[in-house]
Length: 249
Length: 248
Image (cartoon, rainbow over all chains, first blue to last red; front, side, top):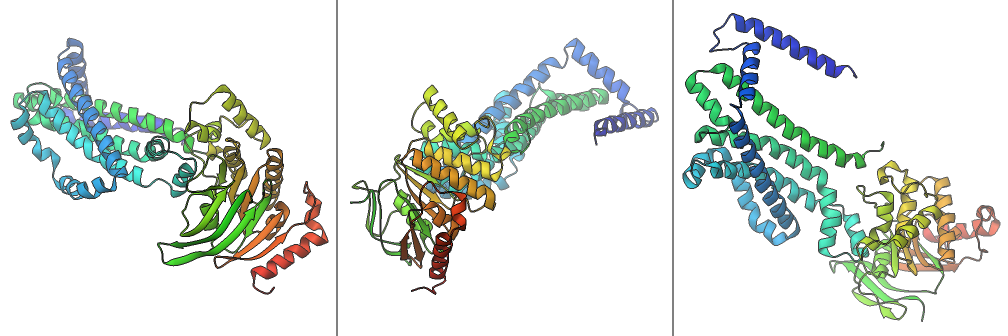
């Protein structure tokens, strides 16, 4: 199994070779060859053409993640702790889960304009729910025996939350964050599709109009890499935390 | 007045199913008492009432003349499962009761290390609970219960999940530490030999009442050989008969 990464890499090379070969028989407008896409990508990065778009999308995603996850986490804790709030809000949470959030993008553009705000809002909204749900579940399902221990030790409600419920629920909360991170990129890009002049999503729409397929592919690669980096960061944190739950060091 | 006095205590779940019925009990300072009974006889409930984790419907529980209404820092509690926090290291787990009260000082850390040393886990401070065996986890739980220097210790079948040899080692460790710190103990178990080996007094509970009480006349410190003496075994037999209702 140690050689698996090598095999994965070999598969990638094989796919690229097939792609290159197939692309040779088709118009560049339909399927550009990997070599062409690669050159476009490098050119774009070197000339700084991509830079403003990357910065724009990255700030939308990061701001959206920050606001969405923070509010999801805080409201999740409140709903997990206060039964009244949970019962009051639960039907609305279920209802809002059913609304396709991305379908609200045109509305947000109407409300918040074509600038960054509308994309941050939509991204935040998309990130909010997975984290809210995982936090509520994590806070509620902490071990009864451990809660009894904290009662025996005379811990206050706040101490029980900080020292028991949140750390005990961390694996679940981090799993929610992992989902949020991936959705955040989708949220920002879809927001940019609908109304924006800058950002990687806007660039994809522009390349479609310009019929510049290699540039479109290059942008897609950038988005994929960006999403992967975010995902890997969260996974790294998760691994570091969950290490304590494993038997071996 | 005893150190811990339980007077006419009655308890029922949600006011319906009676669990305990007019229990009376007293423990003198420094004594080791065991409550023995089948599962479901109400012994854990009685322990939780005594520790202040539950409130009785009727009757009083007094600790050194003060009524017990909530858990006191003077009491330690060891649960059925080690109940350690998996995300904290062993030493952080031992220090938890103090962490919840105030900032940890260097003396606290030294005391925790000393306690870990006493339970034979001196070099395990930086490990995480899941890296330890079941017996080691139980030892950490005991160290945690002792960090606040309690004068009274409640234990709820702490060794039930351990193998026989480990259990005997832990019983000896427990007796040694309780003797060293002059701790009064109320211990719950369903293991007859364990009750006899540990206690000064053994009580048997059945259907929410204390049905039998006997002193254990064995010298201290207890040794492994005592487990095979005639007196020890006869006492075990008597208790066994009471438990199955053959003795009156």
